[in-house]
View 1 (spheres, rainbow over the protein chains, first blue to last red):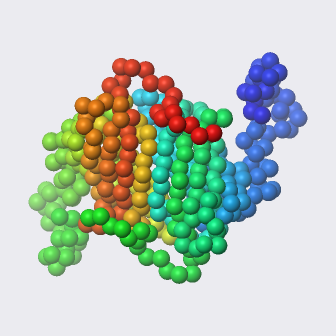
View 2 (view 1 turned 45 degrees about the horizontal axis):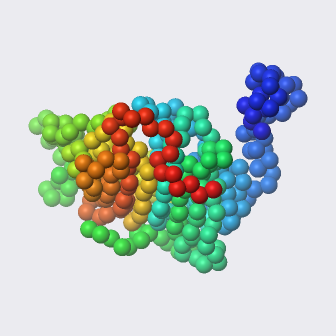
View 3 (view 1 turned 90 degrees about the vertical axis):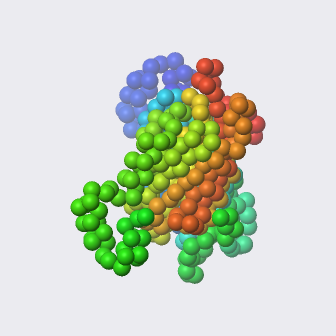
Length: 179
Length: 179
């Protein structure tokens, strides 16, 4: 539970919650999830962990993954305070790449929908599911659903080009050029 | 023409080209295009110009737009030196929003293809075309094609929610939730 949820449930101030947490040596939710996750999840293989946009809190290679990304000042449109689409996309896309159990993974294409606007301070929880058989090399299909609380805010179907990195990959991911 | 193209054509070093340009008071291609564009193109209405990813060099509201975005160190995967998809997407998406002649424009959905990988130092030229009738309010269809030289590297079809900003827009851009 977040500190916010605890204040509502226990009807005390957020300061009380935070002081009690500190006294008991309990880190905040985000840190707790990270700590838990670090013990149990697979290592990202397709890119360095710090190149994943958002904090990876669960990862089962070639199966599924979860990341958390908080919308801050630098992610919003100044006029509307709404999160810019490419940040929501970046979280989902980098998670879709991170779940691939290969040394090289590149996005070939994607169908995406921004279901509702995301606002400053909201925490986006992206969940990626590998749809295709990992034994089938070449391309993987990954679905990513992003939530704020229980509300879905983004949905994307990604096709990821995958390779074990032994063959040299130059240029085209998809050669259907349309000049 | 770029300095590179001039060195090839005139068979002299890039230093010679640059020195001659400086002597004659001719700025580099990018600056020349910007200067030209500043004189002739429409003003972005749907967001502040500095929130557009890339340099807008042409804009005809509700018709078309062109932007240039150079791939730098901060845009690439460290391992492969290939540009990360979300930066290519961000250029295209923000241009698709910038061509809309309304105070508020938000991306509802997109179908995108990364046609070939883009590398460090390459200049991406995105061209956006509004496909739908601007008189039809509510949603606009915008196609964006991104090129490096004459090669297409990205293709996207965006659906942009548009509004003149008078009605209050809260929450859902598209209510087809799939929980």
